[in-house]
Image 1: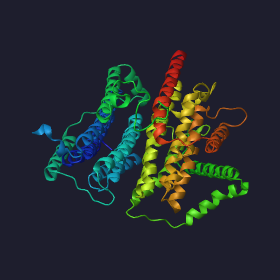
Image 2: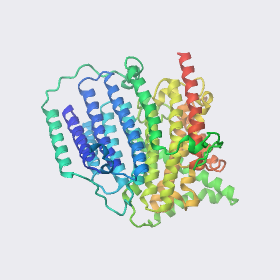
Image 3: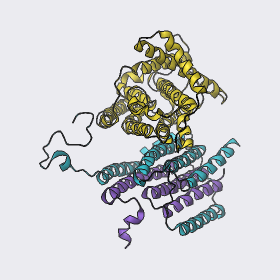
Image 4: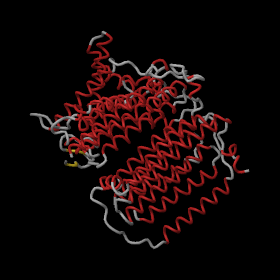
Length: 100
Length: 187
Length: 308
């Protein structure tokens, strides 16, 4: 367990999450991809903290990442519910109004 | 030694279950694979001596994935146990991009001359985090609190389709409110 | 606080097993008395039930998600084992974690996963209904439970379980934070799907989550519920009931005595409280319990501030 291996694992998690976020069609699956990317971020931040600069303030960053995750999830679920309610859509391709 | 073995087992577990999220064809399995991936990362964060953050990650993510599974079942609109699902678009480009990003990040992680460790960890990491949050980094805590409250309100506004006029009538005088689901305290 | 070497985890698991069996026997006796049959049938029924379930053949359902089903069924027992690792027995503990309270919280949240998975895995409508009922209860009880756990931590200004126990030398937390204690007890009943929170297993859905469980899986699930009651009662001792403090007896004995007393109360309550409907309890949880326990936290924080 050295910094490089921690970062490698974090990179793997981040890329898998990125693949999911890019390729999945269902909104909830896209959210899972985003979560996995943030999962990688948590690990990388924890690794940086421990191996580079283990002072108390660094951990605050981790809490901010976790808070960002909860906000992302809550808003994601709310938007998914609203989309589904308004137009019975659960796919990202059905909600591409802003891309045209 | 035992830390290294544990780290590698958890690392492989986290990566494999993370990948399983997009491979398995059942919604419950996908959600809970992600939960296992988060538990692995939470335990790794415990190995990195940040007990509070590690345990909180496990706590939050298991709860979130329990809710996630419900949403998956609610919105995917098909029987997951019987029907394999493959709902992807532009799979090849996504794969290429993510492999590219992984190679870039891995190269960065391996080739960057990381500086030596500065400082030593505090004796009580959790207490230090608490003091940090309540003293110099108070602003972070205050901001996070406000953002969370705003998220709750915004989430409910987005997701709820009934307004107060549906509940209390056009003149807002109807008591008790007309709800499809009666509440337990008899309002 | 002495951290005992890992092999002692086996002894802890054995103790948990004994208490779990004791809880099942006590429940059997109370059931027999309520049914008007001889007490001795109640004493032996749990043992006979264990023997029967161990040799029963597993029932198989069509297109069941066997992996998730098995994980869910065995999970409750694992949760109970994880919880008792942070509970100090007198001056010994297995795992002197500095965030023991959060650890308990993380473990009790696993109930959401395991109970729902048990309901989901069978691919049967009744058991899935049971799983959703549990999640609906979960949405109502979890936040009050979390804030109830905050109160002792604030009063002792520590998340370490042993420190919290040591902070109650003069006065038990259960005495001056009764709301938090009651909400905590409610939370324990809820994670054990016990008493008022048993609609997830109710007969109107043919047993709910347990509808299709059979053989060893059923044994593990039902045993896990008793084990969770034990673990919840054991965790309440350092959190609210003064840990090992008490006259005459040694500290570890007091922990056991208090655990047994609270466990007996939990088992006894099963027949004394009405089942709470998930849809109605949702509003009770959010409109009554959550504000009440938040006020309790405010009060505790004020007193803690005044003391320091």
